[in-house]
Length: 193
Image 1 (cartoon, rainbow, N blue to C red):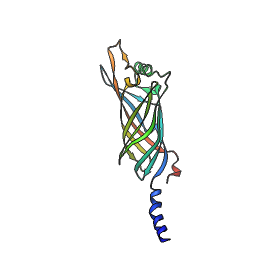
Image 2: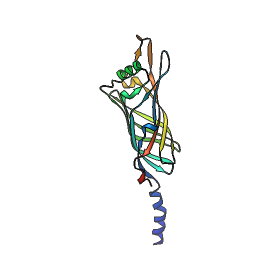
Image 3: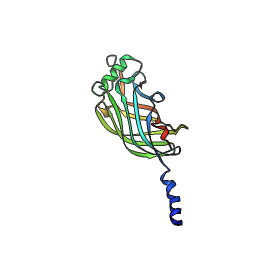
């Protein structure tokens, strides 16, 4: 009996060490900015309508794993503050036929004390490619997780022809960077252990 009790004392705490919790992105406390270059100047656009969710395996303030991470953005919500550029962006991304940009998680590539890297697929303008997304994370006192990083994207990999303007004198580059900061909040904080 003493051996069984000793075994239970050793095994039970480790089986409850990781909390598996569902989280959702809080859009009003998150940001998604697309940065690129052109023949005249650098440019940036902000994504105004997006959502995301995932299951995080937590050990105190450390992320130990991730599952079912997903992200979606409304293509027509990409805004630069310049009407002509926004129209060109919508046309280049074929927003009428492909109104959503989506990232779907496939596996966790790496988890560190303050960083993580996930693999998945990015669907953009009707083309889906495998990508990895790396980011730094912080866990807040309220249990929220803030993940931030940069994702380089070659638009030609998605069949997107970089837009031009002013009779071809303004040409945008094929490479863009997506700078993100996502705040994930517990879906149901009352069940947080």
